[in-house]
Image 1 (cartoon, one colour):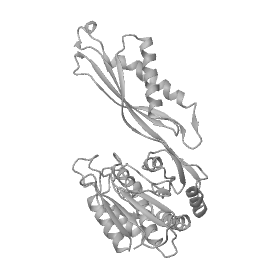
Image 2 (spheres, one colour):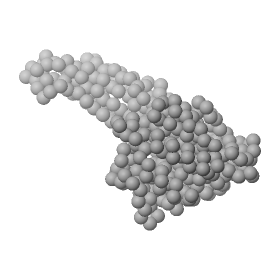
Image 3 (tube, one colour):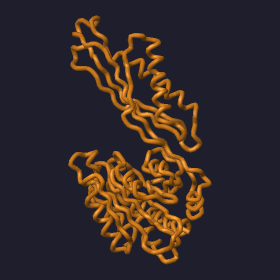
Image 4 (cartoon, helix red, strand yellow):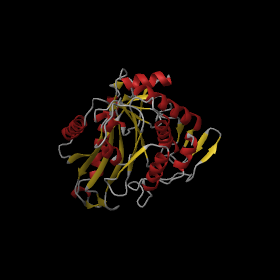
Length: 366
């Protein structure tokens, strides 16, 4: 089976994440397919299912020697369907939900594992086919509890560049408390939504200030106001306003750093308005990641691909793998439409990606 044939079959399997779309198919069918395909290809298979209904699959080479282990990683799940529920081909483009993000990378990794499964392989190639990357990353965390490696390549789409860094993120909820009153008697209340205005202005100033620190491959950290809710009805002074802010973080920035920034921002707002009642809490966070350019996996991948070394703007499971002490890069084919209505991936790039991963595996696993 060729990589484009495998890719088409993977895209045609509905694997929408049920944590994003209640009642969605999840990873069961695609995990069963991957396990069956890998077994027929002469590879070893292990299925993990710490969370019922959310399986991940570990695929391993069965030949080779006791050398270094390379982990290739791709996720099984997708976000909800866009305009296309089945794959279609137009020239070099294969369309369908998950084609770009990231069943093309997954297909390339599986083909590379199969093609590197030769007696001359000095080590081991493992493909971590993980569940739930699009929501809570349950799969990669479960895999890392039972598996380590000397290096990892996460096959997210990188436009055929070698990505050695990406940002993390912190979600912060800021609650501003007011006092409800009838709209005809506003002097008896405190308008929580109005009181949130200076907080938004201060957040915008902070976002501008973040531009002063530039990462060479990722640019500055950023923030944006994601959600805002408040009020009860048109004729009532609102007694509560809740603002959710996402802060994209650079390597070296911690959750504690972001919490300190928010605390200082609210303190400055209170200095201007001592009656401001506001509090904040972190609701979710994911770490940024960065791997040194001279890491062996970066050098090997650069040698076999000739690709540029870059950073990517999105967060990926690579952060968990790197945090487990495994030198990690991202490398995957080009395309467009991740999480968009129309999604496609380059077929020729997917073929080149599989060839590159095979060559990298044979060279690294020595």
